[in-house]
View 1 (tube, one colour):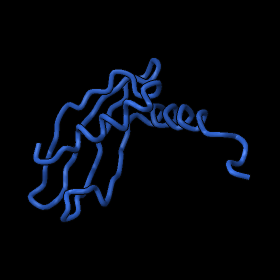
View 2 (cartoon, one colour; view 1 turned 45 degrees about the vertical axis):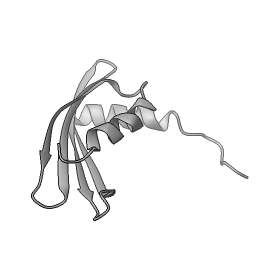
View 3 (cartoon, one colour; view 1 turned 135 degrees about the horizontal axis):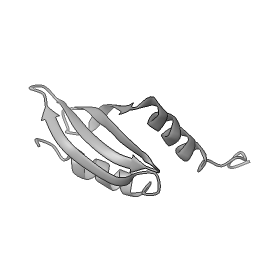
View 4 (cartoon, rainbow, N blue to C red; view 1 turned 90 degrees about the vertical axis):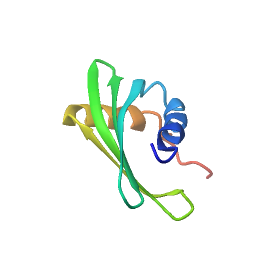
Length: 94
């Protein structure tokens, strides 16, 4: 892999370990330009989730554009519910 995308994303995902169980990066694809795609799988409850991270890097090597695609739809909905359940229900800082 030409960049440290897997390492930096793994660090972020470990903070959400109750959502991302058994996260595994399977493959990485780098473009001729400044892009990279990471193929991953993980377990979310009883669902097996598969997806890709699409990243573009600026001239400094920092991510300046990032997108995630997840399949199947039921897994995306379960992830949404898991993440939203951790958000505060009351306004913060008021």
